Image 1 (cartoon, rainbow, N blue to C red):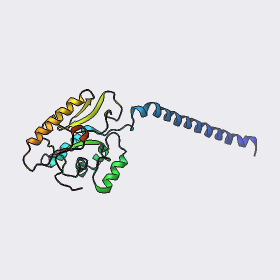
Image 2: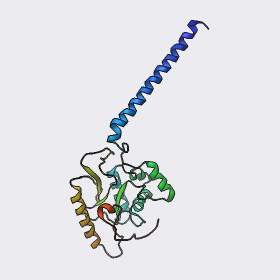
Image 3: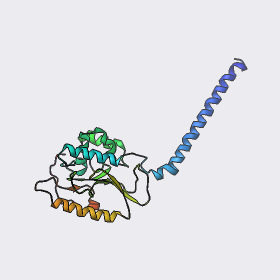
Image 4: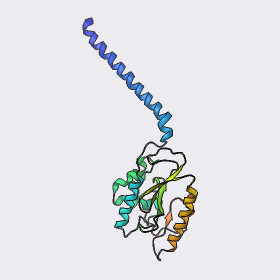
Amino acid sequence: MSDQDSRPRNRLRRGILWALCILSGIAIGGLVVYQVWLKPKYPYGASHSCSKGLGLDLRIFANANDGWFPHGMKTPEASLSLLCTNDPNVRLILRGKHLPQEIVDQSLASDGVLGPASCGWHYIEGLREDDDPQLAVLWDRITGLGHNGQRRSGLEREVVMIDGSAQQISKEAWPAFVREQKKLLAETAANRPPNSPPIRWSDEQTLGPNTAKPSALKR
């Protein structure tokens, strides 16, 4: 083979090597950016588990169930996962801001419901769409994360209210918010007719131990 015949092949090899070097540099640079900037800011990765979308799904469920939000399962998380019966895509929101989607999907595929380890939200079951609008129906299981999973200084949790709206409660305001929620929940439970679904919550660390038993141990 002549030198002239080998030159194009040599140039092609050099071009491939240069391309591989550039791609390796991009990959290394991306890893550095992720470790130095993105990972500290988005500790569980960027997400869009839309709180307002979840609030809307709750309202739609209530409209189809005589005003009641999901309830009646063994745990509040299992009750919340009843939303998937109306909208299977809501599973993409139920992961919250920190859980891998496969954990949610595996739990739903296993027995059709979620539990404390497979739901990204704390939920209060036994509430109605016409209850006090100052009541929150759910909030983040992980503290300090903004709407898209980014760390936010001074933020405690994002909460979804009875009317489907979302609020971000600061660490400073959280104790007063919790006191108000406990008061409103006690008043709401006291005014319920007999044999109403019990009001129960998953966040016993914040709201205290549940005293009401589930209305039905379905799963």
